[in-house]
Length: 303
Image (tube, rainbow, N blue to C red):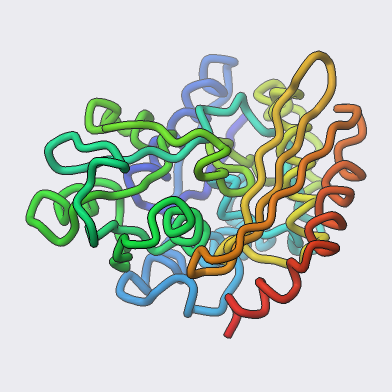
């Protein structure tokens, strides 16, 4: 079967697309990758939180999918909005890479050893809020660009440290740059972080059948719980919302975090449920966060 993958042109996006391509080719299919430039790629100098558009890195790829120009799209799950265009769906979620965030610093200093007022490169309100909750003295420096671009900015002295998804660093061969890892109790990951989403036209059952072999049910269930929480909070990927679900003794354990962007208030909720039905678990955690006052904090982040 001939299949065309739609992908962004960044090194990480192409790594992800080629990962899927290699596995489907080994199953006897013929694949090509079509690079599609997205709004997020064109707005490299704009702060993500200020851009006001959900799905910045996938809109044009989804349009190509709807139009039939490509047969499937490979996304970072954390970039995928909870509401998908009509007719599209996630057909497979491969096994997740480590979802935790990592610190990359000059001189190999851990977070607690960075000097007072150290500059941290990140454009994520989720990371910013949790970092400031740990170290209120830190200064946040807006940092866009691909992983290698950010590493160069660190080297030239734009900041003293970066916080990045460990999964991206590992996939691109930069694992040796990692100074330390953050536990989910320190910096809870983004919804879907470390996981890939393979999106297709749901009526294209032939492609759906082909990609279903890449699905990892445990990861898929965890991500469904996280995304259900995000949807119930009405949030997008640029707000200070974090979630991490993992299997524990046969149950699904979900932690959710909503924070004030300045780190002064951080709400946390946790619940366990059956992995076969993850959406109610996500809604339960969202309801507890809303009961604690999440709406007010998310309103602050939007302003």
